[in-house]
Structures are given as C-alpha cells and as structure tokens.
Length: 152
Image (tube, rainbow, N blue to C red):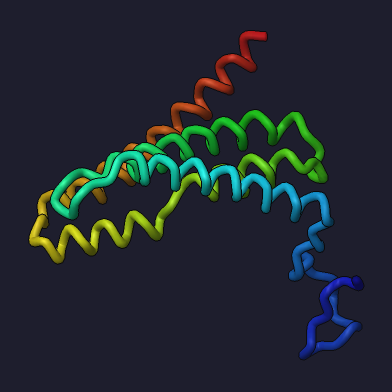
C-alpha cells in the first residue's frame, strides 16, 4: 500500500507522517483473537462464579479490571524493549488477553445499575476505586519491571 496522499495538495505535497497504520498480518490478528477469547472466558467464568446484586460491590469485574491493568503494565514494559515490533506476543497478551479480560463496558453497566438502585455512594466509590486501583496497578507493574531490569 503506498503512503497516504494529501488529497488537497496532491502527491507533490511534502511527505508527512504516515496517516494510515500498517496492515496487521494474519499472525497478529489471530493472536489478538486467541488472546481476547482467553481473557473473555476467564472474565465470564469469574462473573458466573461470583454473582452480585446492584447494591453489592462487583468484585469479579473490579478484580479482573485491576489484574488486567497490572498485566498490561507488565507486558507493555517488559515486551516493549525485548521484542521486535512484528512480534505477535504484544497483541496476543496486551490487546488480546488484557483487552478480553478487562471490561470497561460491564463496569459502566454495573454503575448504571447501582445508580438505578439509588446506591450513589457505592457507584461513586466503585468508579473512583476502579480508576485509582487500575492506575496504581499499571504504575506498580511498570516500576517493578524497570527495577528488576536495572539490577541485572
């Protein structure tokens, strides 16, 4: 596929950064699909094993989102410097497994159910804790990977 062309100025325009991302190869697409399926199955199994009402803390969703954030911080930091850009491991583990395991949409539905049940404090606490714990998990994983790498 040729480089993106500025439709206003035409092909004689100065070269710009590529606007169209490179095509994903079949191995990358399969890696994302397999990783996403594994993450989704793990999340669904936890949600099924630990049901909750709209007025209870949704531990399964909270836990998988925090674990996914921790894993994503680890994978991105660890693999970023060790693997070539063409490696299928990043899309398998990052986009696939972590993307399938985490679930922002389920979190939003749970928050709406809490609000409908007039559990405003629970909804606010769950929202705040999810964002803060997710950020902390990514930061922790990144920091630990970098410390271990520096010691070697």
